Image (tube, rainbow, N blue to C red; front, side, top):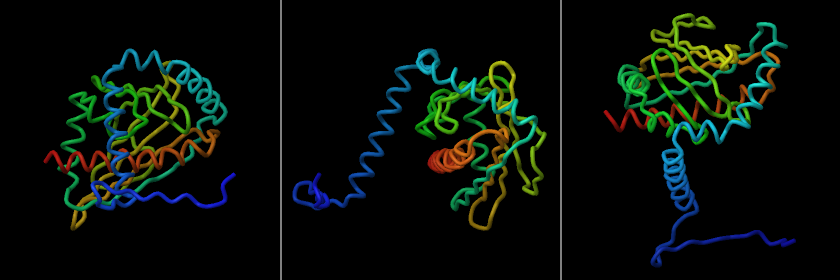
Length: 218
């Protein structure tokens, strides 16, 4: 095995480029590649392709839900942003949901595989913890935890058979320079640690990207 650390220097037409620039280019092209593949596959093929994973997730989440006996564990992610207020963001985001804007909904996170927004629910395939999971998210007014935020949106996620596997509460408030977002997720108490922890990072990724998209669109 080599003992000398690897060092790579990059120059384009003689102009040195930092490692961060190469990584930024890679991230941009990875997003483009994912977008192309998701568009080519389409929703029906995506459901079929991920059936082994979603079947495995169904079994695990059903077991954890039953073992939890109605008890929940909570994880919270908080974001602050400048240059955009709550009304501007929510107008864009809820508009994308109502329109069933597949491109905008899938682009927010690399592990968004399907987001079929129809009527009062969204059919979702995304990674919960470490496994792609298919569930149905319904938004409603019954908040799972107390809130003092002026604007809040609650939701309940169920499997196809109606088993409740998660609860969310998205809270929004204006600040002098922009807005504050508090994102709460609840999983069955018996679920392993990587579900709530993973979803905190999932929230941070998707809502940051949605904020950027809303800011650009306005």
